[in-house]
Length: 348
Ligand SMILES: [Zn+2]
Ligand SMILES: [Zn+2]
Image (cartoon, rainbow, N blue to C red; front, top):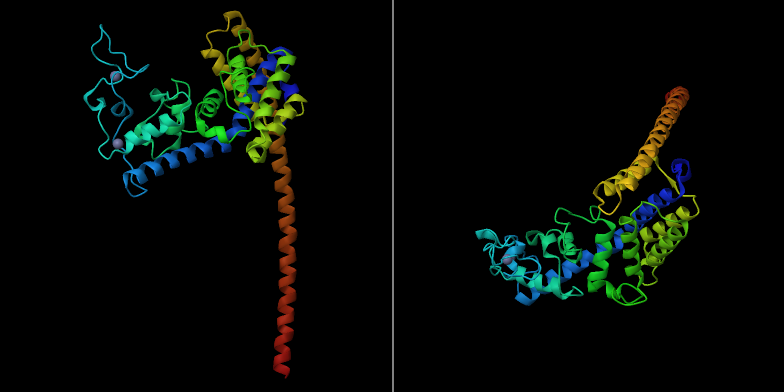
């Protein structure tokens, strides 16, 4: 195990990485809550559709693609204009708008729209063919408009995607103690959490002041400890504990976890457009330095583990020998007792 302080050496850059970690911890803490609610949403839409249509509850359709279910032009999706006669979204014969042969998909589409706060699901993200088989394809309709098409599960979704589902899907209205109002001031805890995500992702110098970090963590802890449902959620509870440890520098991570964090941060940095080249180079150099440090810790760990295993093996061997010896002597005792018994029987 490594303390973050062992690994991270420069304060404000360290804070930026800690803020990253705080977002990851929060996402993990929301896993069961959000994933379960999205499953409920999917099954309640499917159930209501089949019952309205008078079909058996397990009837599904897997032949309609998203483009089939949306008219052309659809706002923000189709781009048929004066120059191009072909819409990019409905660009082939099989992608033309048409009704679902069993009417299920059209009704599921309407169900998804009805549960969207602004009635504008992100159709670009979702595969309608899988609406019945993967609840996450339904959940992705509530994420930001682009960039989630290849995401298949909660685990593969980033913090921003997860927070967006909670903000945009009205199902969460009854699951949180506050009213979800992204446009209102003061902002609700979910809106504030989204802002934290943005601030960390869009930081122009990969630095976070200690005061800001404290504020970010407080925001995330407030969300995870929400009194309606999350307060009873084990994973949310665990995340709160970790965030508090992060604040007090007592969070212990495995070297593999630190290594993964650095990899994630590096990947974000590579994709970031707003970060100046100078800051990028500095942060990359810093991450490289940390990686070397982590590698050293990892080597040390491997040495420790090998040493530990050797000791264990020797100890186990000794214990096994003792055990075998015991079994042997017990067997001898039993043989002896049996012999006596036989003698007894023979004698009577
Ligand atoms: Zn179109
Ligand atoms: Zn269909």
